[in-house]
Image (tube, rainbow over all chains, first blue to last red; front, top):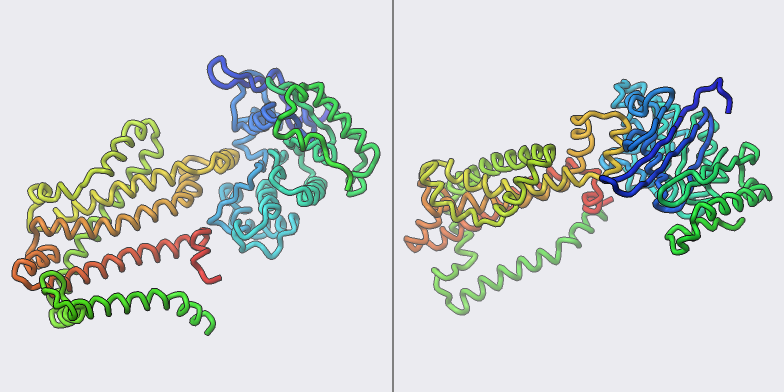
Length: 276
Length: 262
């Protein structure tokens, strides 16, 4: 990793335990994410990958360790609006239209109406929801709702995009389409992405690096560089190298202790998907 | 045209039931020669409603004002208390069990006492009963609404570094509205009950509850029934106005979406 460009996210010895002397969710996590990277965190349920994402976003306090985001403390980065976040549920406000959901962070930042409207138009084009600005969230499909959430997270052009299983609730077809769209948005916005998932094929398809985490206590079991060429397309999923990498990530997950518990609810997804 | 047709289709069964019910009542009273003090015929009640409209209207409106006053005081107090308790959760854990228990108390039992506290002939004592009745459902519902915001919605606001007041205004308040309105709708009914029953234990001459008792005492059963009908109509109007406000403020809500024609 080059020393000249400061990391967007730098974690050193991050540990999280819940309750007094309770469960250790994360143990001694060291990780650096460079500008422009797309890093996926993958691991079985309960490996603390979502907690780790929340620690980066200063939504959860680590028990020990250092978290640096954009060269400052995680808390300062949150206060400065350095990241946008997308959850598994779109978390849209029903009483706001699509346009007003997207512009919510801009309202909080005190942008004036004209500037907000301009920015919302750009974002609607980016996520291809032109014509739906006056719809309410419940009038949209799950995939469209998640696109609104992504537009909202990108609205104030944060350097970092945190995504917590954003497509986990979508069907396979929609998920693959959303993956392609996300990559297109990532290329255009030039932001850095940290992406939590428990789908191996999704992680390999999207990422420049895949961080494989082990079961409780969550540790980094391996980091797999994804050397698939950019831009990734539907053909990427049929590339022999794609399958090699899927196999490698799966093997690293097994070593990380996945097969101790074959009844894990996400086992099915972890096996990966066949080529269409 | 098609819409008018659809509305007619929707309401027709209810109208048929109403007409049949009133017809059965009228026919039954005549056929079995039911005594007036048991049940006067609808035609007699309607006739009285028209002939004594001045007195009936002023009595009903007096009591309606008692109910609305009590509603306003009780609902505001319940809402503000909920805001405070939702903010300071420790206080809520100390107080809420009693608030919920108090909601089960038949507050109407206090009516004779509030007359001692606030005066028999004024509106205040009836407003007090109505207000206390309204307080608890609004408190409990608003509390539930303000605290049932999804954790992710709060995390999102935290990620924007939003202050507590912003979170309240932009998230907690709007997402609590469906709960608040269900509390308010219950409160309209309770306020009417509180005001009329309050009158029964003694009130201003000319108040509806006082008059209904007096009419029963002097065997003016048509007047008493006319008073009951008016009280019911005002209660329905009261409930309907709150429901209308709900629909206007929450056009976005899926429950309201279902009620609209498109």
